[in-house]
Image 1: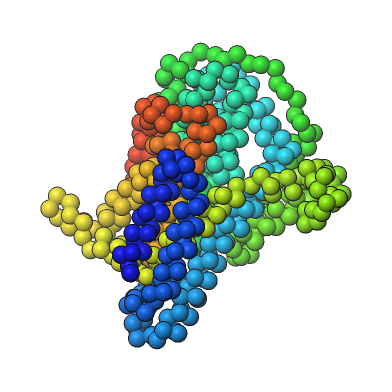
Image 2 (image 1 turned 135 degrees about the horizontal axis):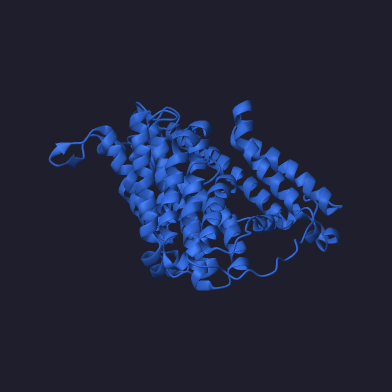
Length: 461
């Protein structure tokens, strides 16, 4: 039965990675894989001899002696446990996505365009690189990429030049998302999973992530495409007088979430819901809306587009939310049977290098670097989800920080390796092989520079 579960997971995983070829949204195989795997576990529960206790991060003793009813009850409890942990991530993301859409409703991100006063291509490169680095740490790398490429399209009309900027924005956004607990789905998973804390994550990853962004941008600034100046067109007036206010309010509300968690010790999604409530209140006041988001009947539906909150809720990426649900619960199925734990133990017992046995830390470094490379080929969310079940190191262990860095920045090496890359690919119709030839080597250099910096810092401190 274990073999069958692994086969189903591999098939589902392949369907996810080949979504562009199969023309099937990745949420479909993710949800199907999750449901089928848990159903098979329920049918074959008596055939399993081991069970993994996630709360203790150890195999459950005496599981083989449990009767059928006890095993089914344990299965239901485990399923509910993982659903609760997954839901914490999903509700958090829903809140963050809604706040970002509310800011966009008021055209708040247009305020960022006012920072670009220069016509120098090199200076514009650095402005957008640093904006991507900082913004992605606050509103996540996916949203930061969408916002900055949208602004870029209004500033730079030559598409060939714009593609280069888009490539560097992807690298910078992924680097920026790696050092913030709210900057990337994977770091959010590690944060909510109590593997890292905000202060320690920033302390250990800010400099490596900064190098991951600065080194490629520095090299690129000497390339011919970034020499000279651009033609600047007249600025368009903002669509809303409250744009700047909602931008700063929304960003401040998102930044408040880690502070709220530190003060109250409550899960992050609670703080995100409070932030969403505050931002929504101001949004409704500024829009002079007269109806509630929970009361959209036939009379109010005609005017519903005037409600910023209702409008934002209709634009959030629900397919992404459902994909995360499917893939995280599918990985949880493998974790529950102890497969990930046993796999990690097998790695730690000895991976040959030059005819000798590697130490546990060497094995971990190699595995995590491979995880970073792997995230460029396949999605980094299931890779990090798997690592949560593989390693039992305590909170704020350097291993978790390295995982956050590798998974967050490794995806930049291919255009399909990160959510930021995929959305940029769609917005600018970037060719896979163009990115591989022009940008991938820059991303690889940045990834290695940051990884080396992290290892040096780890050994020094």
